[in-house]
Image (tube, each protein chain N blue to C red):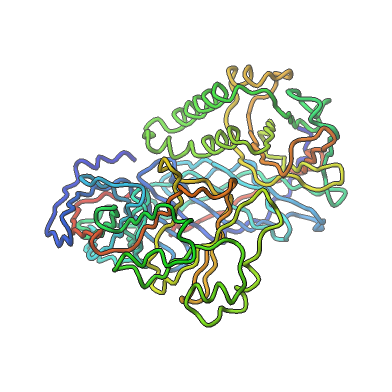
Length: 266
Length: 284
């Protein structure tokens, strides 16, 4: 069962890097799922990355482009690759035949999303509570269409629609904007338009920059026009809290092509 | 255990086979979904479990049973068996033979309700031992020492079972311990309940308030071998706990002494044991 991955040869055959963030990849582990039900077999190759100064928001997408087993069979990519956290980032292939004992060659494109304040993919808006009702992303030219608005948990449907620059809101949003009878919880609404799913993460940071613990998040989507998130806090919202958004941004993306040979199957 | 032995075999058929083959040894296993039919009339609440199973592959190598659950609510009953993984070169198993237990309750629900259980901490609540089950609510745990000892006992058992296990894989299997510890350190009301149930006869535990409402919001269940250090830290008056199942239960309210503990279990005196066998299992 023991496998020495250091014996694997990692070749960087080209670097179609979108930014200056180079990194290398090695195989962390391999998991194969075989089933008596047809179409369920799959091979996942989990990767470990070096050379990048990553943070908790860094994501990788692995797109297999070529995989050939030691019998000469070509394995197709399986599923739709998605951006995943480094610890679970993997390439997904259709399962090899039982007779195969290794993969002769595997080539994959790895896209890295490594957001930072410097590359503009992390936006921090201090004292956001004082700016409620305004589009907080208006000053950020590339994101101003996202129309991100913070409101208290009070307001009529018409008032909320006006804040969003809408004539009206869908019926099912109307009843949500009421103060909670439970005084132990403090709710704030984040309303935004995000038709392309560009907002990847929303955090609230305290004055020291630590994430504020929330009791619950409700995430409600209304088509792709207006989305709503409602956050409950254990304490009243503080004016020195900061809203932090992680947003899709090409400047945070880099891409490399890697090749592995003689990958042993188990 | 007072079980009835029966010469008539269980009818078993393998319906689905899945293999998890991994470079991480702890993640590798063979799973079989087996349909099993018990002799005689189906009884409401009937349950079946595979107690023992040994597989033999085409090369004569044996595969041990890793885990099986109680299957219920249907006839035939679907049961998942987890077994050791055969070598990649093996194409079929010659056979899997073993013993299965069939539980036919004489009433629809089999449970024990222990009233005011919080007033008797750190001792077996089921005395005299009800069907060999042991359950204790534990209080006054020194959190850091307890979770450190729990981690050491857990790691020791994993290292014995998987000598080549990596640090990373060990860490991945400590998630439940970490979660249990985080719950314990939080301000949420929690209760630790431990049980010794090596045969897996406890099906569920509920904590009920004085009006009979369940007060448990969520729970973390962790199974670990009990050792002397753990036993000492738990201040157990009954030293006979050999295996530990720790339930760290998060509650809706602060604990109250008028609460009851309800344990649903399989009564071993109503269990009949049968042989079973399946042959020529083609691997995917």
